[in-house]
Image (cartoon, rainbow, N blue to C red):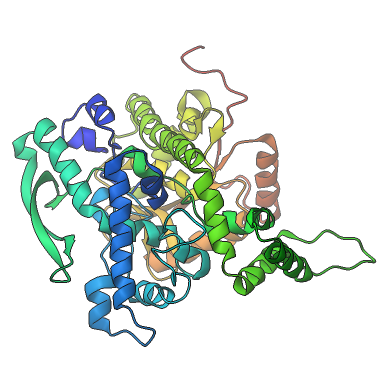
Length: 491
């Protein structure tokens, strides 16, 4: 099965590794993204130059921006970008079609060029300028927006990077010359220019490779979560004694306290106090960023570890899992969608519980944390597994379901994969798939629950007993523990 770039384009994985590119999936986006800080902090001149180019464009926007309402034409020309879906990285739940940088993002950026970016390009506290500053203040602007914006601004480099590898390693029959829009910005004409590249071709579109050293997972190095969680340390970096005192005094004054109860403030109360303090003293943002700059080497180390983790989970583990399933008749077809789903779930359960299949969920003792990761793993494993149409996250107006296995419009079976530690598991079991069944006009469904500890198993059983579902054929529990199994290779 052609799940990965190396499969489809007949490239040795070692060649991709040597080149430094991540071996992307061509089935679904993998949850990695470019962190602009890794460009800023890099010791390589070419990456530092890319960061400088991003800042140059933002300075241009700042010079052109207005505090008044900006017209749509200007937003579309300079601020709004399509997602670079051809890199197959990001947050799309199925395939590689994610959200673009829309007009709201453009307006937010324009507005903040006059506020939090008022000294952009002329910072006094930090060593450099950082696009990520926008997501620290503006609600609704997150890591996906920041990464998409940065990816668009370095797209020309990524296209050259991919072309160089492709012309040396990929057969000409698997390549094509593509005319790509918005590759580089011409500051003389103030317009985006097109260019032609010889690139890998997949389903009538090109594919882009990305250097692993620019990627991270979970959060950009400069992020809102760390800002609030580490807020109490930030004032210590302020050299001005008077300002430091004012900041600390204001912060602690915003935390509700009851002397009689002697109760510690909650995490939410501290976060609210931190947000209020930042609003009062916006220069604290720069001191936070300064502390991040001073620990830049740690950013590279953590990102490298996260990329290695992703390589193991989404590629190596999946490849080994598929190889095992090929010996279990997993990829043969049944007579109808219900039998197909049942057969596949039974084989998955047996392979995970009684063979080496449980290793799919682990790397260096760490296991998957979220259900989106779980669904992505099974989506890769089940992709094009039979004549049945297996779709992830089908949404018919009532909410998404993990998988729909179908053969024509009248033969559908829905399958949900859930983690046993899901806080809303009971609510989900009671209502969710039944709603999906009505929306998809099918009466067939399975709910697969994976647990990783004895306590999780007990919790699931208690929930099933409470709502009267224990023992139901369409409720399947899978033991994903790694502390109660002997590896099949050692048995």
